[in-house]
Length: 109
Image 1 (cartoon, helix red, strand yellow):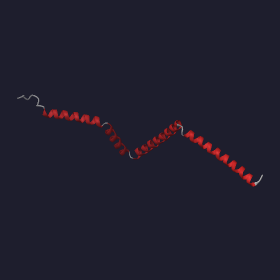
Image 2: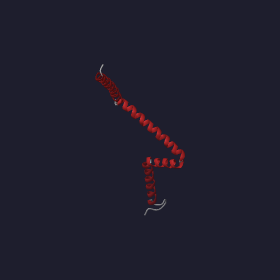
Image 3: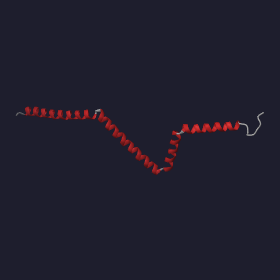
Image 4: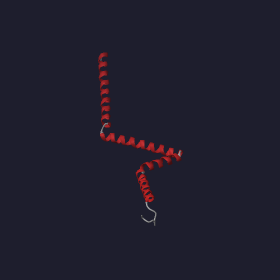
């Protein structure tokens, strides 16, 4: 076989190998882009992020317990603010009614 013929055969073999690699990559990309696979990967990433966040919060709580207690109280107040303000309004209304009510036993003129 002559040198140009060997070069052509080598080029054909390299092209076939490249085509095989490309088809394998294309198949892999198709598999990765399937909705079910994307959901699994996203769920795994979210779970890992949540685990890292929980570990970081635990480490912070161990290092700074007073700050974490303060943060907990602040979050509790934020979540329960409507109930707290409702109780405060009701207590204020009772106090206002008590102030303007005539004393017990006083004669109404």
